[in-house]
Image 1 (cartoon, rainbow, N blue to C red):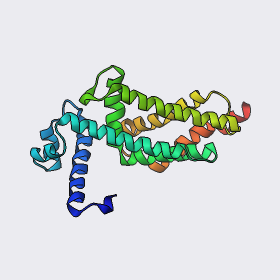
Image 2 (cartoon, one colour):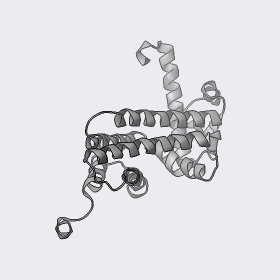
Image 3 (cartoon, helix red, strand yellow):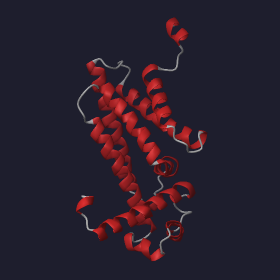
Length: 215
């Protein structure tokens, strides 16, 4: 699609992407209400009028950013989870996807996990987000993840300790890795280390060899 665009269209797309990238960073670190269109324009080195060329107002910009980033995440998640093959392989690819996206979209996940999500749980709607639509997306992702684990239980690949519990555990350890990056590693993403830790903890637990032998 991008290759079929004219030079002018590609330039317009790059400007829009630049604006979204700057807005993503400022919203993530300063908050929605604390960030103005003028702040975004200054950081992006564009005039305020350029911002309004692409987005009618700050709310529109914020919703566009959230919707596009969430769609990217959900599309990749859906592509991976729908693939045939061993469930263990699918889970491994999901972990790889998360680590890769954490490294490339850390500002977005900081914005969504630490700013947007808590406010949605309180019934607030930063930027005029559709609360019900966001909740439905979250529920749909957990539903698909639970179905994946049920398939693994049915095939004998996974212990039958409840598909919903297994899905929640994987989701939880992924979110925990985000908090460790942001608050424990000062935003530094050790992709290989995170992937290894999640895989080892989730598939093999945390007990040392001596304690495993005593079980």
